[in-house]
Length: 412
Image (cartoon, rainbow, N blue to C red):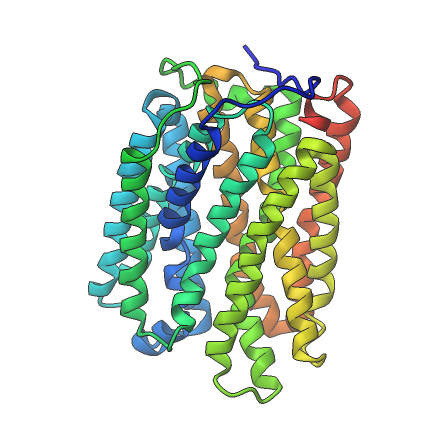
């Protein structure tokens, strides 16, 4: 069974209380996801603390991606997001993620830290997909905008550790502790202040065959292929922009380059929150396929040029970074929105989780490749490789637009 949105009536409205429900869930998401980049934000300090080299430091971020994949695949195989109340699952994931992140304070070295980061990522797989599903129970007519706000909250949560790190040059231990407490607070808010909307998805029986059957629907497949191209670019950009910008500032002789790079990175990643809102509005009113293609075209263009701009004025580099940060995530929620609209409604949570899992698998090679290619060929080539994802995503979205004769995929 598929629930098709109806956008034909100008007077159609989502129910009273939907925006309050969204506010609570978005706040919970913002707080709960801060542990994602907690270690990445303090990589320079951890490099000194544990005596790491650049290649080793990358695994602190890659480990979270791998953990998320493991957790998401496990959740999809067991259909947890369709069998357990979403907000209860969010609370459980947030509590365990906060604990695993906090244990970094006791980690004696890199390998124990990597294990804890894997566990953190796996636990966050019980936060992100259920939050998206819980939000969708509140909206039918402005779902793209609402999901955009949710991903905007995720974006701010991902940027927050850079802000914490930049404020006064805090010790890495304080950054880790602060993000753990924020994640715990997010889970508590979701469970005890949140509520379910009037459009619940049906509960699903455990059926492992449904896991891979979700991609037999061509529209779900194309929406997911677009998402995979988007993910090829997104997390590598988020993970390595701070290092790129710090080296740019140092090249220009800026004092305290690391601290100012942290503030700049917070602004660049945080700009994506506004991008998510704009992407949602465009998706609801202009069409999801067109909106996502536009976002990927702009972000891919930024990826192609920014790495070659280190000799340019710092403010110009930052400006291009802000444009990149705005558009690189503006399309993210629209891929998820498409899945909630066209997938089998009994297994929306499973479809979302599987889409996310495969998408995050693709983040691992790009996060690993960036420092390797940068050392061999410079930032221009390294960031330029990320543009391959948007190109593939645009092709998928054009195919979806052609296939959507009735406008489900193209207009949402």
